[in-house]
Length: 200
Image (cartoon, rainbow, N blue to C red; front, top):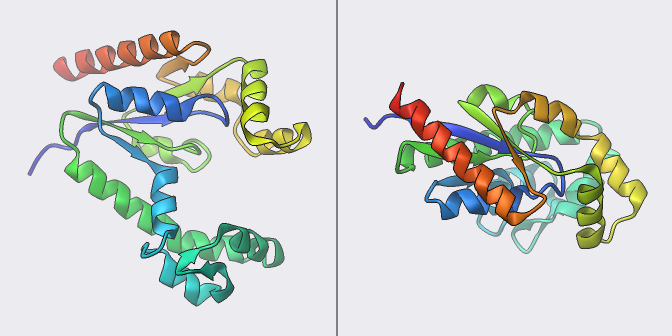
């Protein structure tokens, strides 16, 4: 049986540049597992979450795929809905992550998990890289790309652990003010982990 790879949890608040940073790790040859992409796959036509959710809420399935706005509507009307959905989705996500880890080639892998701290996922990884940028940069990026209001942005921020707290808990900090700076931080992180593994 092959040895489990070193697991680096990659996280960061909304509009901090995490997706771009995950791509940099992949470009450096590190396998990357994406929590959001996994949920998208589970909800898509033929995905493993479709039939269990159909049994819970038939109106949330359109064209044999989960229709997220219908799920949100159900959650807003039924306080037990979110727990039921998580009861279906969380074990499927965990199984997908475990299959990825087992199949990962190399001595390390990245787990891209937006709500790593909020869900207690920091206990499942060997080190944590937090993607960060100054508040003004974050706000500008988010409002530019999403078309939401300032108030909606503040509401979304309030649901996440503050960036300052995430930075305190990070083993590696990746500042994304410039692509060059972010790439240098990614490479520095990888070098450090290689040294840790060599000296283990």
